[in-house]
Amino acid sequence: MSILNVEHLTHGFGDRAIFNDVSFRLLKGEHIGLIGANGEGKSTFMNIITDKLMPDEGKVEWAKRVRVGYLDQHTVLEKGMTMQQVLASAFDFLYEMETRINEICDHLSESSEDEMDDLMEELGTLQDLLTVHDFYMIDSKIEEVARALGLLDLGLDKDVTDLSGGQRTKVLLGKLLLEKPDILLLDEPTNYLDKEHITWLTRYLQEYENAFILISHDIPFLNSVVNLIYHMDNQELNRYVGDYDKFMDVYEMKKSQQEAAYQRQQKEIADLEDFVARNKARVATRNMAMSRQKKLDKMDIIEKVYEKPKPEFKFQEDRTAGKLIFETKGLVIGYDEPLSKPLDLSMERGEKIVLTGANGIGKTTLLKSILGLIRPLEGTVEQGDYLSIGYFEQESKNQTDATCIQEIWAEFPVYTQYEVRSALAKCGLTTNHIESLVRVLSGGEQAKVRLCKLINRKTNLLLLDEPTNHLDVDAKAELKRALQAYRGSILMVCHEPEFYDGLATQVWDCAKWTTKII
Image (cartoon, rainbow, N blue to C red; front, side):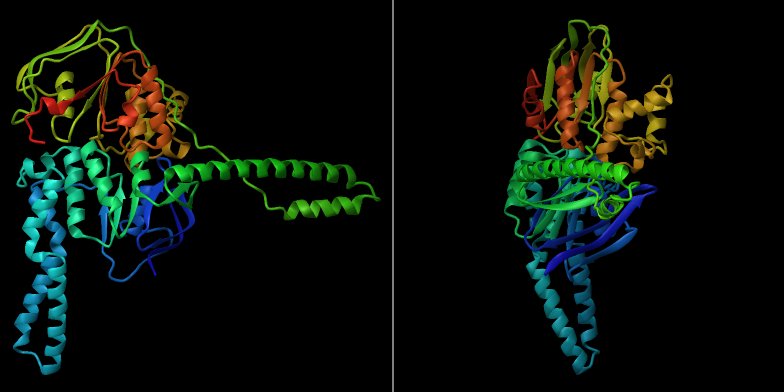
């Protein structure tokens, strides 16, 4: 019996088709990796199967009494809610059961004998469910999960809107694990998570008995937790047994076979068309020509294998900066309270430094302090001479109604429309993406728009805050190549060792100077 059936799913946005007659089945115990390039519809698919989005056509059918837990990359947490409240909301369905138990108890005294038997049976079932789901140990369960995810030391009474991106992800993940759903739906769960907690999540998913569907561009993480791959490509959804590496082997072989079959068919078509053209006018050979024409008409045409446009990043470089990029003296970073000990740091021209460490210890705050976007609590930051700084934020705060073209044009008003379109296309965006509103694009496509702004501005210092989040495999590989080729200086926050290996000249572990308990 399948947990989820999706039949003949068709969906699109305007004239942009996402799915065309897609079918999907999820069985018990399947650990599925849902992969594909940015904008192929992975998050859209999740939204459809969780009823957040209505498909244009098709049927989505869940098995009865299946509880679904969904970790959405775009979930917005309400201001005023504490971490304790968000985590406790995982048990809302149990509180509803408790309310129903109280209602039954109130009705027992005035019910008939038959009604009483039914009510007692329901009461017993609900009571068993409360026990199974650890209702009477909620507080200790919350504490246990919060400790495992490193949230307990932050204080569970902290407002969720004051948390960093990684801490918010951990809270949502904690809520999900407390819900004990029958199926997990995870959309980019490793974004913003530090190495330690990615390891913890990997172990958790490896031991997870129920089914899950996982969207991720983190290949080592995928390989370690999934046993099936579903590949979204060209409005289709194809199933492959095994991990990501096995999928790539089969996919490349399938692609080369299709290319060879296409070439053979094209040659056959050309020969047939040539024969028909030479012989249809002659009485003696007309029948043979007509026979070959019929063969042509009935032929199933093999589609040419079209490669998706791959991004091409090349950072514009400004004049050479001074020898010193920046120097801090007694720098204490933070907002209301210190996040670091006094720091004496310096960076010289040509260095490529990566900041690592757990979430919430001040990596982003350090970048912003060096930029001068926030005032340090103590100490000074001295920037070097002739700096042209490019800054890539973790997330875009401004959700306007501008299209991609308008967004780039506002940044570079001297560009012609051709130059704007060309700049966006080089970042791996298609015409449909380019003409769409930025806010309706996927996380990866939005990141490419922001990268487009960055690479077309002349810089000699790049400050990058988690630039790999949401990017697909091809975009990550190209970004790494472009950063290696960049002759300026780089200061980058990153949680993916496989990305910065071979790129970084130094790795600074921020845990060494943080005042936070980690």
